[in-house]
Image (cartoon, rainbow, N blue to C red; front, side):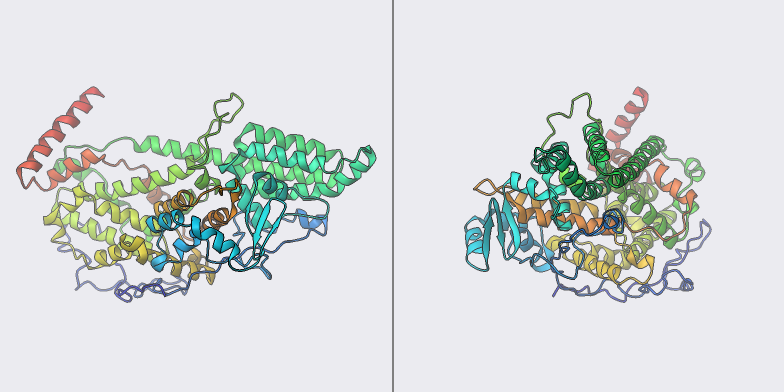
Length: 590
């Protein structure tokens, strides 16, 4: 059973801030009256007085969708499944009972759901156990170049896996297989090459030498081909930013038009949805670039009381921790929604040899994932800047306490990424060294939050909280309870170690499909979290402040910290002198 946190019940409600510099003391002292309960805010969710994630949960069993036979054309195009629906969601029957013997699974089934080095060690030492695992227990069978264990596909040649993806008149691949192979096939070949080969095989399998018979046979298989392409364009639309993919899709549309008008119309609708999605992506990337350009302006490095008084701070933008946490959740979910599932795999996928080809759409394949990581860094630096900027010690203490309560509200919402970014910013050395300021802060709640995100035992406390949030989302009665925003850098790390720790190919040259199942399972969980629509009201003024307010660089933070509380030793004095000279030189050059 996963460990539980000893801090359940210690969080109290957060009071709103008043940006009144004459306030005699921080609004978070023990004699402050508690804030009245909000009406219809949590909508029956966990109260702030309890840890909403203190729920010991067993590890979820691996599940996949059952093989579905297509029985009518209406079934092909009904779009009943959401684009980001988890392909591993519970189904009436499962074609593959997934054991816990795969090294990738083993690393998540250790105590505390540990990954990282434990995953790496287990995967590196599994060679001798692999044969016993596959042949010592259960039923192992091979069909051509595909190997199954207890009805689970465990390995196959690349050619066999491609053939297994191709639909026929009486066969359509299992939905979980489609997602898994489309996701991870880019480790072995470019999506354009895969699409070309699948479409070619689908057409060639219908050739008999009789033109009339060929047309009839292709008309029968066309709906299934359209269904496969629909799943591809809706789940991995960013693959089609490659102009070669769009040309291939256009060629197949013309081919389908010669055989089946119904399928041709479905292809047209599918293409329109794809273009709309890619257009939205382009607008999002332009908006992020514009916001980043505005935020590149730096605040004044050398502070004065007058300059500080003129500069607005976070309390002037929003003095309610709960509202600010809601707006942070808006930004998180907006940016999550534009991350393609394939970006996790393309982070370590093979380099495309044709990337410099003039016909290739030149966009970085992990740009949205990188933009989200950059947002985490910006939020951390924003927190540190807001704390180091004020001249008065009392005001710095109030801002620290305010961000502690924002972090608490993020925890209660399920926004672990913003929570960790705030903790990271408050632990930066320019903030941590402000001892006189911290002496005026009640740090009890901050220590609790640090405990929840403690990296020891591979973030075991955080993983326990994440499982609790995931269960709350699965049984949610309101849209607010569905929110799960993971600590993103750790999610990337888990996927990285799973990829690096387990071989992609077996000694016989087969693809290790057990590893692909595990990669798909982790990414599919992200897709479920990504599809949640933020239920909170937008406050554009607060959002604008969060994404455009200039923040200090690391050197500027250190200098601002020394200006707030002077150096305590000769080393800090030398550091301040060096920073002043360096920053002054940069300003003169610019």
